[in-house]
Length: 411
Image (cartoon, one colour):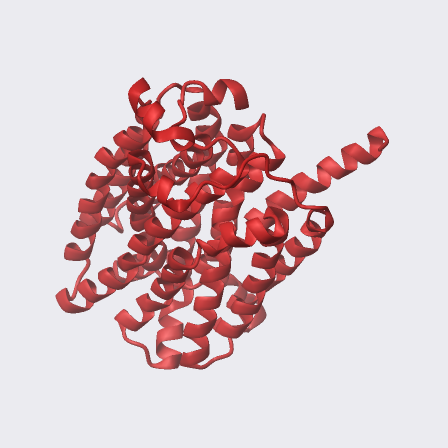
């Protein structure tokens, strides 16, 4: 292959990765800015409205483990493209305008996102083994940019086009189809042969490291999805107009980009990720406290602080998953365990907060519960981010790979 073709192939791979990553959150982030409209149109309660996100995140967690099975049969690249096409179908179905279609479409969309979430760390390990920190940064930044775009533009798109929530939320199918087309050259290639037999899940489940990583993944996801589902409503109840409330959610996603662009590169070079995890959690706590005590006093400040903390947290969780396994197959398996259990835990957040809000009549109790989850993130992050002692490394095998050796080899 000529040098020019190699460069074009490399560029297409990177563009495809970026566009695919942009599709990992819009289907989720596009619900909350128009949630009041959806609830009013379809006659849903606050708990029913929160259940839209809950259904998606449950499927994201419970059905995410399909990804290793699909990757083993069809390859990671084809699995990723299939996830994009399923996502487009689910988003369109969710926008059909009936309650059954809303929840079934949410389930299909959540399943697709779960498959792609699990596959992505393996895709990075497969295509960019010497630049894991950099390309983890690239795809996690794409993830939060996609969320920022949909959450910030949903209400302005309604006003500019005259469309309702059905048409605006259905627009998330367009970038999914585009990404599938761009990823087609990767999917048409023969799947990469495995150099080692896949490790059974029971080996992963016996490793303490798996559960440390899973706990951190779940708790940081729980605090994230609480905010994703309810931030616009919190600000509207504090007196902000609907469009400004949507902008607040978009702002926190934009602030996440600053963290996701830098934290994986820096943390991937470090022997221990504990300092990075600690700072990320403290920033998240500060954002929750601001929303609890004075949401309308400095909304931009709270959202920037919260975004920096949550952006760093998700980037660190995904980076640790990728660094802890030796090859794409093992990364995908560890990713499946951590994300399936983690996101299933996270799915309880929006529904629980909706129930607490409805029963208490305000945001004090729900935000105190969310703050308590943030505090639990600190010990979970410490256990997930610390280097393992030598004896633990020998017992844990590939999943317990030394974190001070991996960055030197991959970055």
